[in-house]
Image (cartoon, rainbow, N blue to C red; front, side):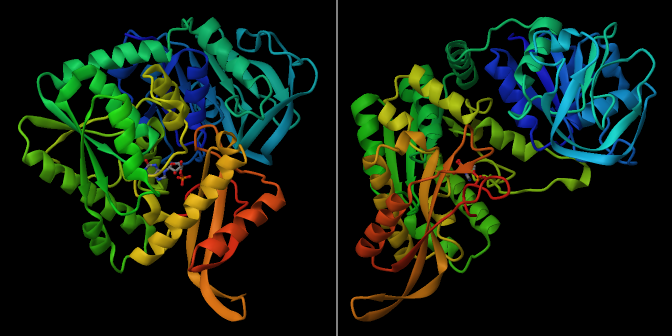
Amino acid sequence: MKESVLIIDFGSQVTKLIARRIRELGVFSKIIPYDKVSKKTINQKNIKGVIFSGGPKSVNERNSPRILPFIYDSNIPILGICYGLQLISKNFGGIISPSDDREFGKTNLFSKKNSPLIDGVVDLKKKHQVWMSHADKVERIPNGFETIASTENCQYAIIQNLKKQIFGVQFHPEVVHTKGGKKILENFVKKICLCKKEWSMKNFKIEILKEIKKKVGKNKVICGLSGGVDSTVTAVLINKAIGKRLICVFVDTGFMRKNERELIESLFKKNFDIKLKVINASQIFFNKLKGQKDPEKKRKIIGREFIKIFERFALNQIDIKYLAQGTLYPDVIESISKVGKSFVTIKSHHNVGGLPKKMKLKLLEPLKELFKDEVRILGKELNIPDSFNKRHPFPGPGLAIRLLGEIDKKSIGILREADDIFIKMIKKEGLYDKIWQAFCVLLPVNTVGVMGDNRTYEKICVLRAVTSIDGMTAESYKFKTNFLEKCANEIINNVPGINRVCYDYTSKPPGTIEFE
Ligand code: XMP
């Protein structure tokens, strides 16, 4: 069993980043919500360390997330981050109170004492930039703990109890704005938890292939292909494990990008010996979405119909027991993460949120422990051509969540054409691989324009292009203005139905990548 670091989630927006950083160090890490932690989870032999994430609550609130004290007796090293540090302090008798000077953003740290946690972190003796986000602070540390570093407003910015191997940091080492943050996490994972560097995509591939074979046995698997990288990697992986017992189904929802179907067919024919069935279901999806404007409802309807179509297809086949999906780790975490009653659903990702509670098929989700960029590395391991592996992500609900509000066939057609032009121009400019994701969005409002001598009253197309590492945060891509002008002209001149083009400069957060 691979050595792991367990990350206990108390609801921080950046918990996923902790997991990513640990994996970047070559050590497997897993996130678990605070209320799902049992003695059994902690006592598993492969758990070498535990990290408490930050969280939005105050440890002094009555119903704030807690963890039972058995965890402190397990002899496993613990690192508490922000809320995690405060929880540890409170547990051992420290005092936490609201801070007069709430700190959000960058601040400077000064070290006072050596610790294995900050070993080799340069410049700690001088001003050292860290990223804080807290309203409460530790007023008094518990007996047995000592201060390692402070900031101007926060005396106990790093604390430790070496004997118990318990550490706490008030700032966030997982975010890039904390200088040396990765080194602090590395010290914890390698020097304190003594984890070995075992996590690699090669090892993952070997393990997951064994797992799929064992789980599926002699049964058959049906896999939904969306045209995106995740479902394609899923299919190729399962095909490698069980060969012809995998049947892939490409459901044409009517919300695909231009030539998506042909591209998938040729990829599978040319490169892989995989059975592929194409089902044209666009009429069903258009009918079901009629009159629906609400993004969540649209997502849920599409997810539900997908499953129904798969189940109907599977019923006519013998021995199909599993439905394979390209669900990724961020989707899984998003769907299980909850902190008391403050749990907020931003979006129901259709491969998780749209599934009905009772399903005839069992789910097979071999990528559910991976982040997006890890999937691409796996794709390379599986010899999926770069032309496909490096394609920009495409959401399951497709163009239906990029045509805002109510769906109609004509507008989807308009959006598809505009999108194709924008992507082709980006490729021609040599920018495609520099951008995480680019696409067009069609707004459900008309504006007045003039073409030739005529008045036009047509739709607005928004161009969206972002850079990102894993889709969890994103920045708008800064194109040169004349390139955007060229795109606007090309789209307006070639796509009837659009008379205005805008560019979206919103980052994530506060925006999201997709508009719905
Ligand atoms: P947001 O819009 O949440 O998107 O910032 C983050 C990334 O996820 C993709 N996305 C989806 N992928 N099913 C998917 O497989 C979905 O329902 C879905 N919704 C969004 C989005 O394109 C971006 O890359």
